[in-house]
Image (cartoon, rainbow, N blue to C red; front, top):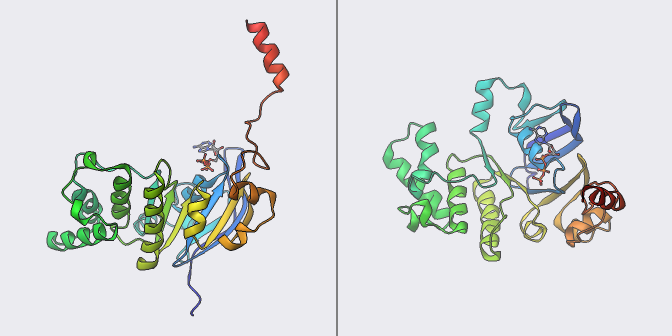
Length: 271
Ligand SMILES: Nc1ncnc2c1ncn2[C@@H]1O[C@H](COP(=O)(O)OP(=O)(O)OP(=O)(O)O)[C@@H](O)[C@H]1O
């Protein structure tokens, strides 16, 4: 088998909001055809990493290269052209409520191409077919279930045949069946369209069943990484806590606080 081409290369990436360091020396490689999960505790910098890949924020040092181009060195036009090849689904972006399912999926094709309407029709139906919703093209978003809306959003995000798809929490709030439908769709679409998909998620079990590689981020650094097989048997306390869903471990359950005693005394003085 030919070695797959590297689509995203992240090298020694550092990023801070003002003086607050969020990511410290992150290195990652993502190949065409791969589904990659990024996991980590709340506030560990996962969404920020997606923003760096999409060029919404600029690294303090290091770089993100997509398809051989360093993102933060692109001029405005080149960045926009690059973004058209990236699909981003942040918290599964809402559908336009006043447009039908068909028009939601057609929206970007109409905005960004000069394709004739007859061709747009075929393409939209093809994208909807890929998510199993061709028969629902006339429905309005209000008539869809949560799982169906997400599938339409997925069809819309692949409308322009992206080479890279980024999903921020694609499984949140779904029942177990819809969740595995979305999971297997992400896998199948990645394979069929030969794209690369990055999933930021807390859903370890679903992710491990569909991804090729997992990165765990903690305090802005990659704490562990590996294939699902490697991750499942990992003895590293951090990975173990995640994979086995333990509430406390290296990732603390409690937000930093003053001692309990102090809080209680404070309450007494207030009362
Ligand atoms: N615009 C901003 N300005 C300043 N700080 C920010 C900004 N956006 C995010 N942060 C901080 O950066 C840190 C990383 O945020 P990020 O959203 O990347 O975390 P995350 O890993 O995606 O978390 P979660 O899983 O809870 O969504 C957080 O502590 C957050 O408070």
